[in-house]
Length: 128
Image (cartoon, rainbow, N blue to C red; front, side, top):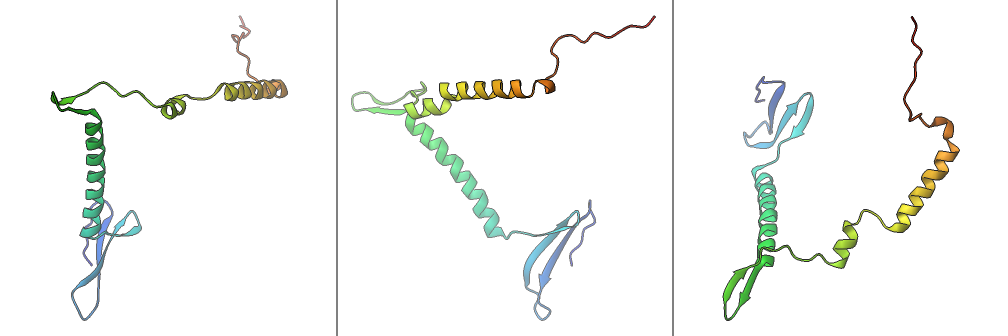
């Protein structure tokens, strides 16, 4: 048992009694036991995250790069025109959805009028 008493954190190591080779590492945070990942999994996760962001950056760079045999390489920093699908996805809702929601709100407002709050100023009586 490897123990450190800093803010209720403990580290333990599981090993076979005849050998001193650890089988797994565990840590305890606020009463919950977690198995610590090995170095392979930590490095694999960090590298995968790094490579994902590098790939995204390279993809954006390739979209801006232009090559003309007469002029050579050039860069286009203007944003590309969005496709029809991207334009449709960027719209919050269609006209049909707007009309349907307006009808539902109207129906519910009429049905539950007594639950509606008063929107005008509240007048209170003043006692002298």
